[in-house]
Length: 408
Image (spheres, rainbow, N blue to C red):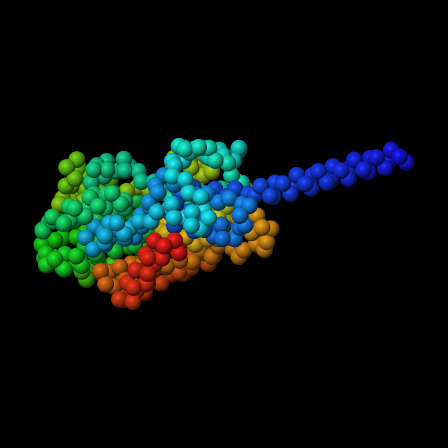
């Protein structure tokens, strides 16, 4: 009887110790680590931080303190956008309780739940990979030394070249899909048309767009594709389809294409081949795929508590995939932030990711349209292309201001 009483007492004490240990773990809080300070990463960090109490830690890592909005580059290259107003400092996230570390991500150890950076090694309970897509400049020989508007430094270099151009041919050439912001080549071509008309040199400037796809904006549907094609034609912009750029001459004046053709131009601006960051591929999270596969409802990878959002992942949508664009990365980041917070707080599970998003497509410096819609309908994308309006341009301007102020 005494022995049974002692055994019960010891068992009860063990339970108390276990409960106390679990309580200490909870009091220590969970560590949410976000890799990448673009649209998706910032939105995931802000959303999770807002829903968690101070016992939990949210950290974001990016190799750049200041990140830039590529969507401003079409105006930047024609001198209509201040280069100092295209970025935002991730250090300001501290005002929202998010820790920021300026560091390069060297490796991701999913087994030990650690990320090794150029500054220190970080451990995590939840990991959000939002490192975007890297540019493989070497995939198209000569493109590294040509022009581009897909990178801030390259865009500034192109801006300087265009400021001196009074006549000649400009070629915008994509290598192969997928590439960020599918409307970008066509928006940039139309912005060049508007700029040249504004300067009074349009009759001296040829503008051509070469793309690897059979038509522009295929993901938006046949009607939208036809309307974009017509808009380019009405502006005297040449569109060459199924002709991805494969090489640029050393002097940057000749481009060769997959269809066997070539062209000479005064300015050749390429859209580089996009690829998954090496650190993500090396981690095994992508399972050898070109992009990280995720659960379309939760954005979780095959590894529990590791999520991949934005350009780094792939989410099928009929015969296409959800476009690689900031607005979709932001929506995915918000959803992942909600999911992580609900798991930590042991609260109700959020609704699944809806795959809804709209991108802007400017036709000039004063008019902009939107293109997008629902991408996870089960039967493929349900999208629309609006008419370009002055009101649409104001909405785009507001979107960019909100981005700079971390409201998106």
